Amino acid sequence: MLEPSTDKIRDWGNSVMQLVADYFGELRDRRVYRHMSSQEIRDRLDVALPIKGMHFDELLRVFRETVIPFSRQNAHPRMFGYVQSPGAPLAALGDLLASTLNANLTVWRSAPAPVELERLTINWIRQILGFNAEAGGLFVSGGSMANLAAIAAARQAKDSSSGCLRMYASSETHFSIAKAAALLGIGRQNVRHVAVDEHFRIRVDDLVSQITADLEAGCFPFCVVANAGTVNTGAIDPLAEIREVANRFQLWMHVDGSYGALAVLAKSARELFAGIEQADSIALDPHKWLYLPVDVGCVIYRVPEIARAAFAHEAEYTRIIGEKADEAFAFWDYGPELSRRFRALNVWMLLKGVGLESLSEAIESNLACARYFESMVRASDDFEMIAPVELSIFCFRHVPMQLQSESLQAIDAFNERLLIALQRDGSSYLSNATLGGRFALRGCVLNYRTTLRDMEILLDDLRRVARSLPTSA
Image (cartoon, rainbow, N blue to C red; front, side, top):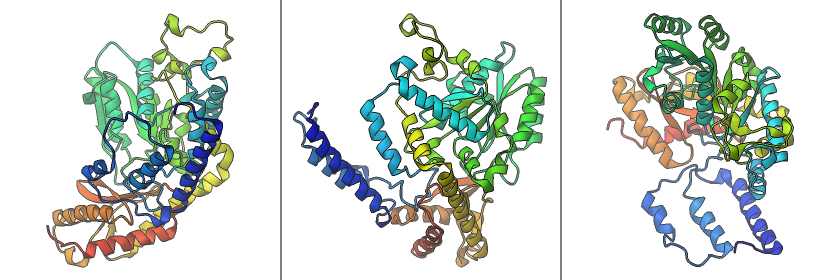
């Protein structure tokens, strides 16, 4: 029914809240992942086009018995694959409230209080990062969209009709940067990949060399992308040095901090981000290290009016009349989206309901778990680190005694088989990375539920699963 009674809505809500509470309460008892096939899931679903509506209890039963068990449990404390936030219960309720109001944050007049709430939370994030008081931005779907918006602003600020545009990013930079260049007409081929050092940070000498060579060739360098936490290893580029290079060559400096930037809240990591506040733009994901559900990305511009020049479009059907300056504000002037959901409510509820002190402690705990895992690996005789731990990503591999005299290719192949077997086992979940041409097991701690004991269980799981595998294919 499209319009249930108030009592019916209350009954539905009680049933949903019980399911939510049960789900979060039972997380540690679940497997992170259950090996399955597409056909198995389809067989559990009624695929016929529905003519008559299903009772709400039946809808919940399908969710409980099919959707939950046949999903990867991203909130599990040993879900170490990718850069995956667990989502917080408080924010799950925020999603419900945002969908209830169904505000569309296009312009102030469309959603006055939600727009003010977004402007407020953007200002809080600006302060967390140390940006100037004039900086501003907006929430978008994720880091990829934030990178796209920032590069569009960079092109607007630095575009030239003479020569091909060139932008620079390390070889460890997320693929969304090259994708943004393609979508914006800059071209993937005009994203110059700069070499990295032994810590997988951009080499400033190679950056300068490539910019100089492009200038001599008649090209137009316009943007350099720095990483504040790469997705492979968590590496943080030397931000202050890159700012100096950007100033020297008059480039826009964009920071992709989608994964790592909010770790600036952790006292032990704060110095790693020195210079981040000098960027012209930054992409970050509250749906990562603010533990929010997807999709909440964010872009901050040091000079928002440059972004407005890139995105504003005058049309009679969007013309705002009869409003003062503040009330004439339009988010569509600062990003690519027109319709926008009330993403800010989750951010506001978490920051206001939890507070920076508790968030800082949770991030510190995540960093400590990754460092503890690194110490266990370095103390073992059957595991080895492939990259140093900078934030909460750890890259390593298993080299049991019987493989230690084998070729590097044989060790890579064994670890690839081990990764698949571990994922199917379901007790812990890792992803993978290729570093220096070598296959690596890769994990990321991004869950406030994860403990040091979970890191020990991960090593135990790997050894247990490895014993069931042949050492050669």
